[in-house]
Image 1: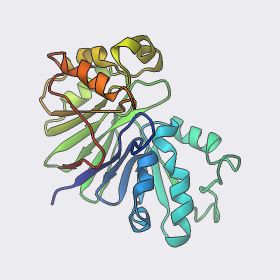
Image 2 (image 1 turned 45 degrees about the vertical axis):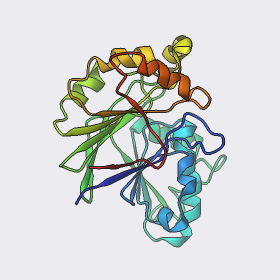
Image 3 (image 1 turned 180 degrees about the vertical axis):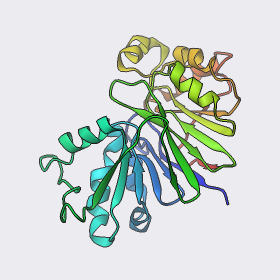
Image 4 (image 1 turned 120 degrees about the horizontal axis):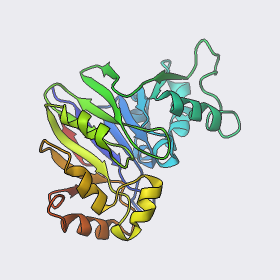
Length: 256
């Protein structure tokens, strides 16, 4: 039996049909929970038991509070949010703090909360049904990880938001069943300085990073800024190292 990864959102912004980062793995796991989650039916929302967070920027977590508020009166099992120690601290202090949103980790009571946190660190794996999800190194302006989704037969790597680095590629190159790589490129080359400051990639730095990749998975580009997506993909296509990369699209389904 294969597992399925469906892209609910992959844009670097909103507007029209654009949705921010959300990957649905089978029907019970989310990798990040941006605005794409809002397109799911209530029945689909009720099936989500686990949310893996790459980092705590709003475009990756904004639907977590609303999802919990929607489903908690309709299910008995808590939703588990898997994230780094630092990310969990941020969620507790700045989101689920009774000022921005209720603390679902303490209601209806601390013994039976609607939200359970599970700390995950780089290199740690969690097996859920027939899939294994492993946290990967990431290099961003806030504590961050990427994730490997492994069915046994094949793996997909989602870098999350990252400026890359040797630690990421050492880990990725050790995956012997890598089929798909989803990597971000948020800015055009004209905004390379901003990309460096914000620890994102642009086409030139993407090309440099991919020289460290030793395998040949299919490569998909995510986090493209609305209005700049065509320009960014043109610049990516102009480089021999990256001309085989494809733009990730909403509703794309990967089979592993």
